[in-house]
Image 1 (tube, helix red, strand yellow):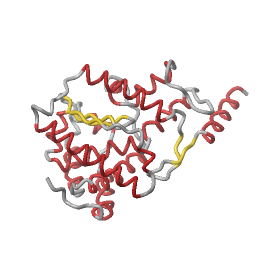
Image 2: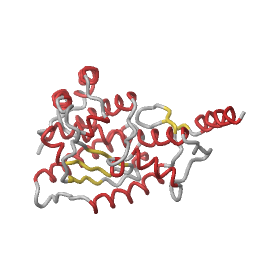
Image 3: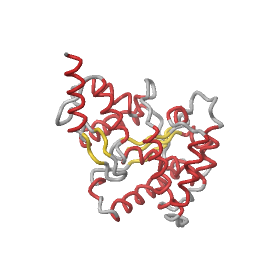
Length: 268
């Protein structure tokens, strides 16, 4: 009877706590407020930057490139949302883009637009347009609420559901799940993977945002092929959590005609 009640409770909470994502139109489980997530993310982001080697834009063209690409994609996303009458969804975003000196072949974006690119990714991206593909992909995960969705699903699995949402502050179980989802602390733990649907959405809209920012989305094919060649490197977190296979590349090729409609070459 207890098991039945728990299952019934989870179903009720999942039904009540779903929200429609403004970009994808898909209903998602949402047990934590965006404002709560962004507040926690800001704290974690500042701590991460204080404990790692941030590459200064004053001494590095690569760091300048990361900020340039990030700002262009952020502007493209803002324009996309504004044109569709959804600008309010990004009103709380305070974008930050930093290059961190580490061998990890990875990049990530936390709620509120807090982005990190690792120097270990740059030999694989090779050029600015390919970096835009990665950053567009990772930023899409954030604006599409994918991590919040994964976190909420894990909360239900651990019995933390509650109608009206779950507060992060002081809830150690909820904070532990946060740390398993978001990049700074997840690097030393078990990173909860994105679903195939989430990956498809990140590829789809990431291509569009990169194209709107002035970067040729066609370079995505070559980039993911290079990522596939990184399969034997244990430091490739991006590869291990973002499946790079023939199906993904085939899907990207299918999506390119749509993305190319948004593409106007960037003027430096």
